Amino acid sequence: MSKLAFAAVVVLAGALTMLVPAVLSAPAANASFAPSSALADAPQGLVTIAVQAGHLTQQDPNVLLAIAKVETTWGKAQNGQPDDLVPADLQAHIDAGALQPGGATAALLGLAGGRRLGDWVNPQAVGAEHAMGFMQFLPSTWRTEAAAAPGRPQDPYRPLDSMVTAGSYLARLETGADGGTKRSLHDALAVYGGDSAYADNILALAGPPAAVGPVGHTGLAPISCPGIRLTQGYGPTDLIGEPIINGVRFHTGWDLACPAGTPVVSVTAGKAHVGFDGSGFGNYVQVQVGDLWVRYAHLETVLVSNGDQVAAGTLVGLEGSTGFSTGPHLHFEVDRGCPAVTCSIDPSNLISLPGRAAG
Image (spheres, helix red, strand yellow):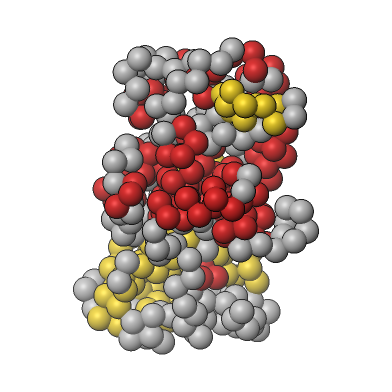
């Protein structure tokens, strides 16, 4: 179903090219997340996917798992509707084989007998449409929201595609990007499911929010110079060579360009982990604090030792162009839950872009 083991990374155009071999392991990806007690029976592979979708859309994985439980009982639903209730243009992007016994989606969800398309079609029509797929989208809503979601998911029957689109839809409803009106999460869920009672049920199942939101600004910048440039930001990208994480081409940090040799400082206290990756990050330092690993990569010189306890503001290295890189810059990355690109979060959760105020 989802590509939980994914390709090595070759990065980039303009500021950097890097290669990071990375394989998603469920224990590492879920190291700082556990489902709520009401969702504890979720298939383990689906928990991993919910965490990844949560990282991509900044939504609580428990909310995504709760939607999946309510809508299709994590895929166990067998509504027995005709397959042709799913429009032909959407069927063209559905991997029906993944739903068959032994297929990727059936195996992920523990569906020994597999499923048909019609098993995940709601018998009750809304106008002329029937909600369909793993997270139950009306076809018209799927067309709009999948096109706006990270990586432009294609398959509403693929749990990863469906969860990413659901998370993105909720985020767009909350921010007002969808409909022009900002909403609370409760009200966004009411739009998603049709009424306030639906939202109450989802939030009750999800429990208290999981820690996937802002972690607090440090007030420090990792590097600074006159004319500092952000040469590539965090998020989905069309640039060839970026890491492909669960089918989404993604840049996992900020690339900040200053002259070679510019000092790089840690923005947090923590334990330093020093390494070298000749085919990717080059000389790098990761500073571990709680469930965060803050990465400073492509350093010309490393100025701390492995295992050092560093304070916020400690000089950890000098900017360079080691590893796969087309010019001097700092790759600044914040990973949460595991020290790998699969666990990256938006760096703006931790710091502001140099020269900009937090907010």
